[in-house]
Image 1 (tube, one colour):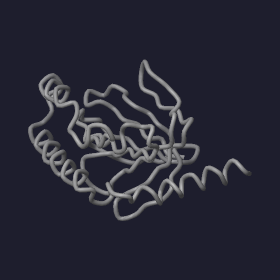
Image 2: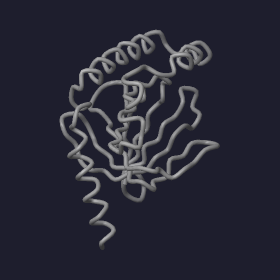
Image 3: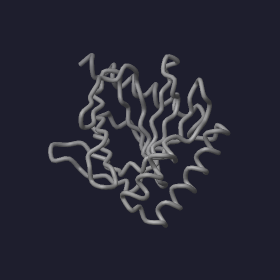
Image 4: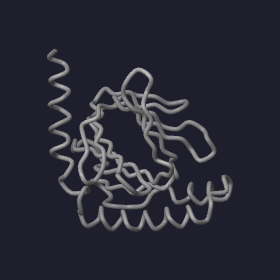
Length: 177
């Protein structure tokens, strides 16, 4: 089990989503979050309607979520993030923590590729006193990701397909035991 846990820059809890570790490739660590997984943050919780994959990259300022169900408008959702780190859980499994830095690079089936939450980023840059070097790094990362996603470069191409297949097979195996 891997628990993906995001925080805000001021230390407030944000999203928590558990999943099953699938493995790693040159892009990073892949975590499968099947339909029915709890998706929670303070004041909000729901069970995921569709399967998702979380990608924790080997480097960079982002954490990615991928959807392959055509009923989902979003295909790719990249949270710009800082201080991404792993820690072993006391009873087995891992927790990956990150600080959600507001900006999101999204590939939508209806709207294409776009940068979201720039207003929230600007507001929090001022109110939470984001360091200028971090702001610059995040803006550069957002531009880089917009280009990669827009051009369909790996891992934002069909790379996710084999990981979805692997995740669904692992879930089926676990249910049949």
